[in-house]
Image (spheres, rainbow, N blue to C red):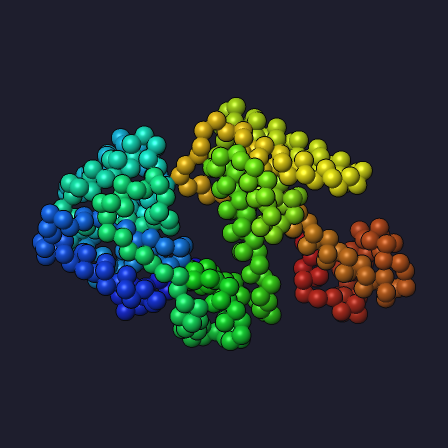
Length: 394
């Protein structure tokens, strides 16, 4: 079970680093439940701030502490007026069947756009008519399209959590799991998280599974955050000259970036857009081949142009809403193949040294050597590791 779920706070006292926001949300909900609303009272409260600061968790804990039913709606799935009306209107009109009170949670309101067929307008209309508190979460509430929502809502900012608070939470989790991780590593995880408690807990769980924990193992998560942001700019933003610099902050080679784009283009584009995007991708691949074959490094600029501006310009309209970008399956296959090749090389090297032949010859004759290495005594003689033996037995 992911530790982020296992150790998700269930009481107000378990929420760390958000004392001011906690007071505001409690006052907001209690005002509804006690009938203290006035004409000037706001009927919606927006929790906004960076990912991993506890926006959604805070809403769920509030529901538990006030004995309220929570009706949760993810805004990215309901981006038009008709669907939003069908789902949300009954929820704000009907009383709870099992609890004394009810809270309406609209998660990730960034997924609703002012141009998404009236979705935001309908949400504001329903907020005005409800007799239940509406809690809304957003990463960035200051986007222009959300200006009308800001005017009609009480805004509560959740701050990035101090690394010392994150550190204490991580140590507490380790105590409950009866595990030990070096304190220097815990401090490094806490600092690297940059206020994102959820990311820190995920990193801790990853590190705790390693026999020899290495902070370098966390770099992959940071790389993926960067590539997700780059994909979002290309797929959802306007094609501008600024996109030509988008890969500058991504700690990946263009070859790896190409695989990410190849995997996720179908998630954003269809029809003619899809064809144009893959045409740009194929042209980038052509220049990649020419670079490797002829060593013409100046062609890198063209590969970059097609991968960024070219793919972005393939869409007819600006994309909105949230898209769950996926890790390329080809990268996984390449990595698995490299792992298998590494085991093969290490076995061939030990065999070559033992029988005094070249490693290249041992690699070429590996099918024969593999049969020889079925003998337990020979395996012990070569001091093969458990992973190498597993490789031989597959």
